Length: 260
Picture (cartoon, rainbow, N blue to C red):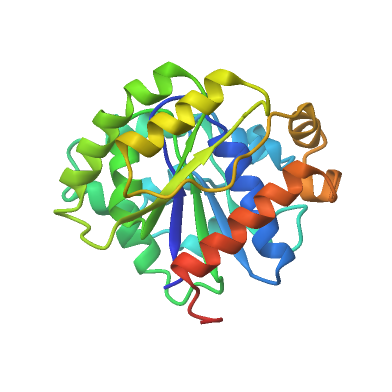
């Protein structure tokens, strides 16, 4: 099974989708085969890759709802070579209610991916919803590792304790789960607030690494509007360089069965 890495934070607006897309593109650029899974009912990653949500035949919702449906049938090729996608759909918002009476509902994603062996990928990356719900619990149970995108805002720090409480409880079900580190996003290079937040992260969570800082840049939004990654849109930009560095660290930390 390829390593499963989730970009996870229950707070919205932390650049989970952008980071999933661009780290996936950076890994693909390094010759790795990447499967991205959009587990946000808003389907932001799906739309960012230029996929018409209204025209989808199958999505992650169908995989979670139908025990018999093979994972391979929901996989789509993206515009980025080496990066495939299991898309999301607004119907996914109904999954929480539908899974309430399902036996071992928190393992549905893990069981589904496990039954898909062998997956022909080096990495599985998951874009998570901005919530702590049954979908989020499924992600935490299935994942090998988490990257926590965090923006330079006081509210970002306030919700972290609840997040780590949840991770601690989930480790009873998934003892292999590790946190690779915090990924500071949307960081203005001269922001005093951002510098203070990063210092506070180091003080409050000294055991967790800080990954390369992702600078605030309108170019990131422009690349999404063009339905591609920043690496394709502006390959020599500081934003591209930062995401390439994150991909390199991710490879070093979690490895890949095909390449370690």
